[in-house]
Image 1 (cartoon, rainbow, N blue to C red):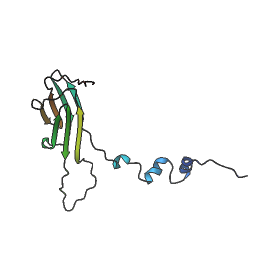
Image 2: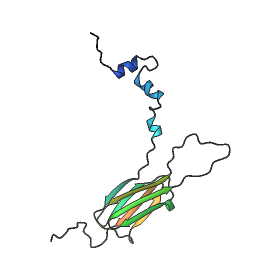
Image 3: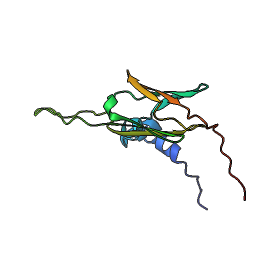
Image 4: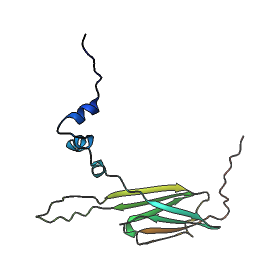
Length: 149
């Protein structure tokens, strides 16, 4: 009767001369530098604090101009969006070797416990940080109840 052996793909790969280990094997298929190939969209990172009469928001939006940032308020829903456009300047004898800078739109929405008074709120952008002072609307306590009928 014939001898049966169990197939072990990892043992067989490491036994092959060109691939001493799996890292070399995957590098031949250009799978090792996946982080360079996958481009993730940057997130707007932020801190939100609450005082008696307002919320303070610090949002990191680096590389933007203040004209390209929009803050929308709808009740207690706040939406931050920013868009950076790709520069089209390219000289005749140049070619792009590597492009890592992000171009496109970033959006971040969040809800607060109280409705926001848009007319009393303010925004200031400096050094890549957007500072918001979102004043709570008078007469809202934040909790909403639904009457059961």
